Amino acid sequence: MMTDRQAYVAFNLTEKVGFATVSELVARAGSVVAAWEAYPKKVSRTGGAIDWEAEFETARRFGVEIVTPADADYPPQLRGVPGSPLALYVKGSAKALFVPAIALVGTRRATSYGRDVANRLAHDLAQAGWSVVSGLALGIDAEAHRGALAAGGVTVGVIGSGLDRFYPEENRELAREIAKKGGAVVSEFPFGRPPDQQTFPIRNHVVAGLARGLVAVEAPSRSGTLITTAIAADLGRTVMAVPARIDSRMSAGCLKLIREGAILVRNADDVLEAMNELLPRGEGKAVSARGVPDADETIPPRPPADPETPRYSVEESLVMLHVDGDGISLDELSRLTKLPMAKVNALVMSLRIKGFVKFLPGNRISLLTASGSV
Image (cartoon, rainbow, N blue to C red; front, side):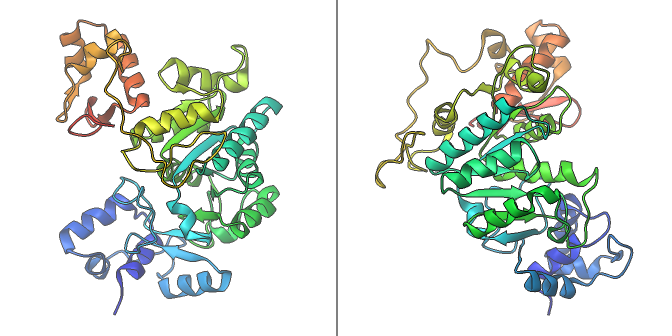
């Protein structure tokens, strides 16, 4: 009899089927196996029949673990998240996906400044006990992975192709080193899937989803990095960015993010401060980039907000007065706050990047959670 994990892999092999479709089918059928048995269009992405048994055999041959939502090894931070993978193909240690992670992302055409910052940030974050997640691309991604490895830490590379169609070739040895040293190279794409314009945005969703926070290290104004930061913001992750010279074309995207409300990052301690404020009491370690504390030193409870340093600007507070868990339209916000629509749009984007609100269909926003907590 077919198991749930086999059914998830079968769906992952199927043409035009993803998280939303499977969720809807399971809601109607009662289980993923029943949903698969009732699904009429069992056609693979390559046009042939679905052979999930061959997929598991190929995984065994390549030493790859396939992890699905039916498995205990499925990353908890992806479970139930819209757009989460139906299957993750893992080369290396699946346990690496459970280490609290920061994503470092940026342009492939990195400057020496961007590469140095990425390497140093990753090194110091890894020393502090965080995993470093990135996309195993050239430039910023590769330096982030190398920095974490140099610190003896955990790093996870997410690629935009099947594991047997690795890209880019220049980073193949880096990928092998990641897997060998306790990290993981992962993909949600079946064996045989080549990289293309569709796979990389999907890959970016996994990068953002695996991390608790994301740092844009260096990115021009038109960059896939900004797509990843937008995904991270929509998922409620903390968005951060590294500044640079105001006339630096390669950092124009990062400067834009900071102007819109992303947390400015100068070093790993800035990242750790931002993340420690968000962790619940008792979760994780009170670490800094200068060292890891004793095992019993946990993060203290978050202190009450200082009335002298509000969480929002004055204008953001005007918006937040009217936002609840049910949602409100931007038009209504403009009317209630008496602010022009362009200003409301800018404030809402800032609040989204900071992790206070989320977008809903119909040009509406609501609190990130019903209680408004982050």
